[in-house]
Image (cartoon, rainbow, N blue to C red; front, side):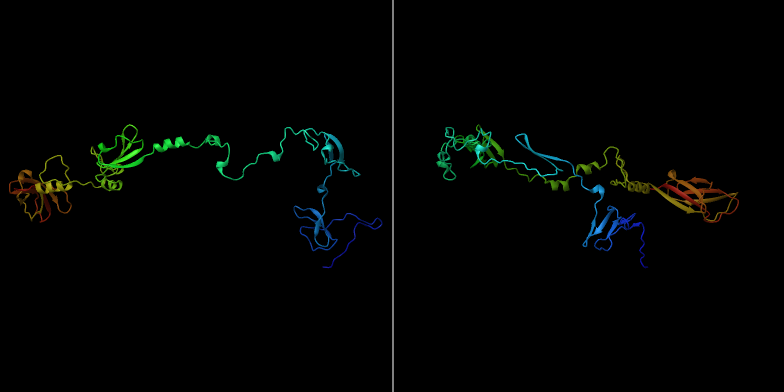
Length: 358
């Protein structure tokens, strides 16, 4: 699309461009020397011009530096020598004199000049004694003779060290028995080994003090051996108490011999053996029975002790107990069932429990 040049608000008589709005761009366009535009990007918001090399931002009014009328005052001994202000219209000069000799100093008390002749309180450096920078320590004069003289406060003196060394144990040898220990000439800290018991004795200034001896630990268990030989307190606490224990799982006990009659625990095996040894259970089904006078009689032979025999008659099919008259004798059991009709074989069964015969 071709460009159109429109002239608006041009006052050629006054050489003015009125109501002009610069081109608004958020990014810098291609530069051409003398070209201007308004950078509308956030954080800029200012006009820019191209100087032939780069775009330059024109300062905003509120960013121009403010010049204050600050005053600089130079003083000499508290009196003002010269005052300068930031917006002065002419140059000013302050003459500051730096003294180069003592006569230039007005208040010269406390200084020594070359003309001072009274040197009573002074000594020439050439008259000062020389200070040794090397040589033998023995050549030094007026040396301190104590540690304290050197300003050392955290060290032992020779006497203190001798006393401490004297109290240190010193091995002197071995003797056969305690009675053979020296009784004269010994000093504090002397130590002897007594062979009869393997003990060491030290002289404490009054008597021979027993320090230790050889001990045979072979009868004792090591800690690791004890752990594998004895139960720990933790494991013992897991055990049931002797009084009224509350056992879980399947506790076991020795099975007593048959016929045992004590307070010993009876295991299930002992009970089963006792029942098997004392009683016997027999089961028999009826043969075909013919009634006589309305009663069917069924006789079962046995070797049980009739005094301890129990018999129950039940239907084979339903298992229900049947009312019957049962008579026991030493060698047989007689069962009578009320019936006016024949009873087929295996209709009823008799369950007999009794003591085994001798």
